[in-house]
Length: 175
Image 1 (cartoon, rainbow, N blue to C red):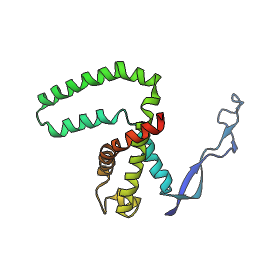
Image 2 (cartoon, rainbow, N blue to C red; image 1 turned 90 degrees about the vertical axis):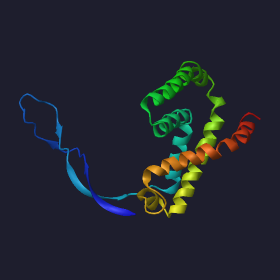
Image 3 (cartoon, one colour; image 1 turned 60 degrees about the vertical axis):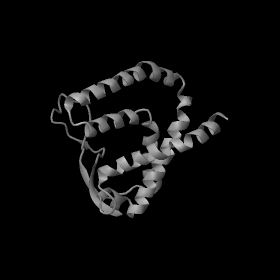
Image 4 (tube, helix red, strand yellow; image 1 turned 135 degrees about the horizontal axis):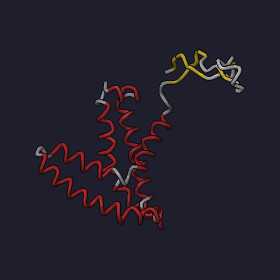
């Protein structure tokens, strides 16, 4: 979808300084208006690639985020939720203190799993977009769901489907 909009851009046009006797620097006129044609929707490869890249890079963080969100939605009592999240914080603390430094030195161990998560996230987003009838319909919520549920659907599909590809990816990665 192409559209035309007004865009503000900088031009290097010298202007007169208000403090002319004391100021030796040239000054520039900053605002000039012109009409520029822009595209409002990136190509499919870019959209799907961004979803896959975020899915791959976010692999270590998504289980923690999912656990916190699940506890917030399923446990109505504040005290019970704090106990549950407190025990999860012990696991997160162990991961931050012991596991993360190890993975910084040996990131190749988690790389095939992250690659699987990225591929499955991109494919599931592409399938949702195709089923909805395009990106505008998917994110506008006119056909399948509302926009916040798209991320949850992609995350659920990745959590369910990606582990089936882990053994193949590990075998291909490490031989």
